[in-house]
Amino acid sequence: MGNIKDVELAILEPNGQISTTLKPEKVPATKERYIKNIGPIREKNIAFFKNESFPETPPLFKEFMMK
Image (spheres, one colour):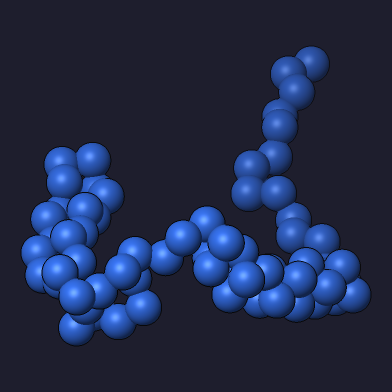
């Protein structure tokens, strides 16, 4: 779905997912179109996280050992 205006009906399911039905004149994305459009974005994100150095996050909990 490229635009919310393309949706005819949307249902929020009990499991939290959203199911949509597109308007009759709209065509859902094919696997090839999806890969073509999302591929460059995905590659940029992968490159960003490989090049970025993140400080180590301290643990939320410490283990206590009983003597």
